[in-house]
Amino acid sequence: MTDAEQEIDRLRRRLGWEAGGPLAQVSTRATDTLVSLVRSAVSWMRQSGEEHPLISILLAFEVGFALGRWGGRRA
Image 1 (cartoon, rainbow, N blue to C red):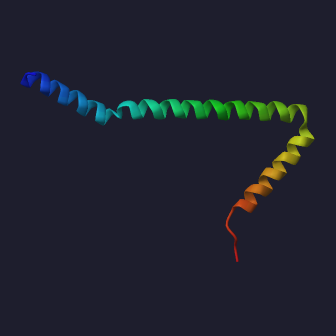
Image 2 (image 1 turned 90 degrees about the vertical axis):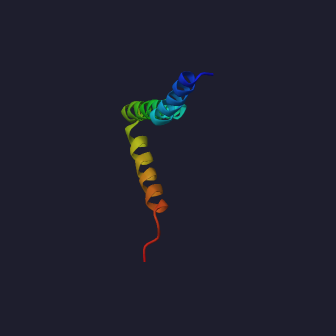
Image 3 (image 1 turned 135 degrees about the horizontal axis):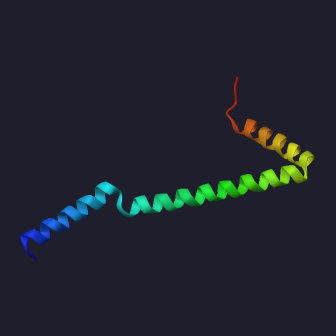
């Protein structure tokens, strides 16, 4: 390899490192997947709430109770 090719390779590696490289692509895909799953869950909950409002209220109370119990104990 010539000095120019080595310099080009070094600059490409540096650019890939500073741009995030494959890690940025993986995190973008993971974020897109998570957002898609949350959208699906919200859509399902909205549809379920319209079809069965009393069951949705009961589930909301149960989730609130579970989240309240999940917190730390207070004196």
